[in-house]
Image 1 (tube, rainbow, N blue to C red):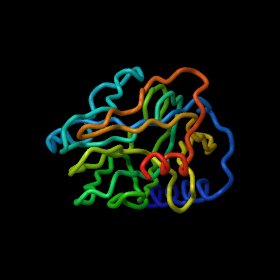
Image 2: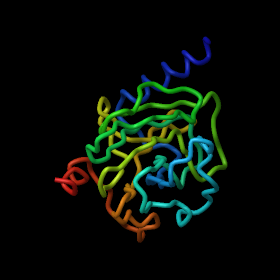
Image 3: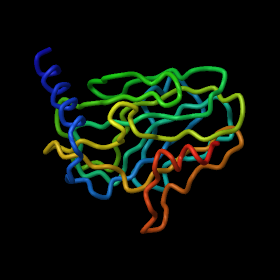
Image 4: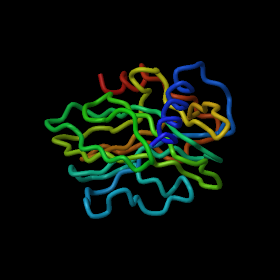
Amino acid sequence: MKPILIVALTLTLALSTVALAGDNQDVKVAVHVRPHDAKLGCDYGTISVCHEIVVTEPGFNVDAFPVFFDVDEFLGCEYGMWWPAWTYSGAFSNCADLIIGDIVWPGDGASHTWLSCQTGTLVCVPSYIWLYADGPGMVCVVPHPVSGVYCVLDCAEGLDEPLVTMCAGVNGYIGDDPCPPVGTSPGTWSEIKGVFE
């Protein structure tokens, strides 16, 4: 129990400080969607290139995964999730070693840590959320409501904020291109909100 508390405290302290450039300076974040399947749980399939991130799901009963990619190493991450205020709240599943917080309503956030440094992998997928969409809309990764950022904590405890954010479309909406052209400017929370107002 002691190592878990130390890792949680480290993540909390690191994420409450000013973000420093770390080892994942090209990190991006998207939302991967699939038809809901409780039996698959945290198994999101194989994502080895950005084109394998599915950002459009025509159905209304979906699982949505935050996917941080172009990542060289990570020890944790922090983010929020946003979706239109449909009838039902989200059913959140943690896929990491440790979670602080929970995502139930649009805008809720979570922080995750792994007990050891993760290296040599393209993607960090900390969780997924089961959503029932009463209408068409977009599901997005947004800044954590407390810290105001979404980021990856690298193994040297440097914080890396994604350069590009891509939302997924469900029940009639088309999601963002998971492989945008080089030089795409980062989105901000106010810009993301503006899309849905």
